[in-house]
Image (tube, rainbow, N blue to C red):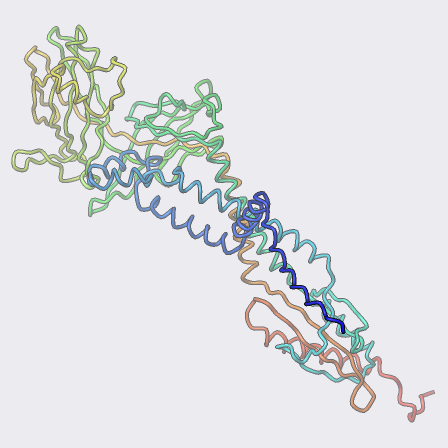
Length: 541
């Protein structure tokens, strides 16, 4: 008797080997790239970019107006430093805005370029064969004609070509058929829109890399040349060299501000002279929305204010006339302004320098013993000044504002107050050493900004192309039409099964009905011309 050996236990399957670290990292990078280059991600990033630009529209920006930023700090001393730490006064040059911008740029490249290649292949691919059951399509129907199948399809093909369809004739399993399509311009518009958006981002980036801008306050009768050293504030792209700046000088002859009855400004205009330092000088008038455009650069008026003028007479009789400095507005409604006038060259030594710090009111009024302004127009100009003598610290090597005195010098006693007064035009303040300070009037200043953006034409062209692509996306439609010819019910004539597929461009039913009616009319018109003769009727001799 034989004994069967017990069955061997099944060998458990070995666990799959764990991918190597390199393959895991590669898979993670591939998944991240696919998510980044998805159209959904590009839309989200575009929305985030628009959302990130909102603070730049609501809050004053340093690149546009330092005065407004300082005013915001004065009005919101607790909130402004927090917003400044978040770069909300420099939104468009902040790291987080640049990160969104760069991610959107990469996402668009990875999303649009493959779609462009696919669209190029689709343009060269003939229309697909007709589906087996055409009557299941949303828009379908039958047409009858006494024409034979080939002649009926000839009529259909001719009518579709007149409507600018691409047409292909085939012998399908269900009989001879026609496939036609049009509307590739809709996808072309889609790609043009996204490629234009990419070009727009490139133009903006190029403007930031090779562009620059500078701001300066210019009092009437003064001017500046396009040099970084002369600007109060400036910003330049990393690829800009000081030798690349446009050679041009601007002189401000006159500034005029006009106001409505409610004291809101209606217009600012500046009469200027400009030109190359070695060339011909020209004159023009610019405004807030009417900048001077020259050689890829623009000169804008971004603000205005007043520069009180003084005549300083020393004890020995030496007089310095019409010395002035811009006073920055602290209240845009009344143009009440504060500033400082530093006169380091009037004293015999460094410890005998003179400075004036004060408040200027275009239309002055005393309220509770304090000078204030009630109107932005210079109807009754007055100035409240404090005179200081001592060491200004201008040659100490430490930076200080040109619009205020160094408080450290005052606290250390090196700059001492020697007089104060409220003055109208023509009135004077006598100092203890015999120096007389006379308020002689005022001049207006304009805040001018010179900007150079080499990408502005590129951005304009990209914006126009973007709009054209958007119109193509919204107004055009992608449409396919199929027709199959079969024998009639009694074995004579032809039954055409017609169907269409439409994507975008509104309702497709009326278009299909119009196409069917036109085809029926064309078939009816062609029938007598091509129908075979009746054998029972003898031909005429």
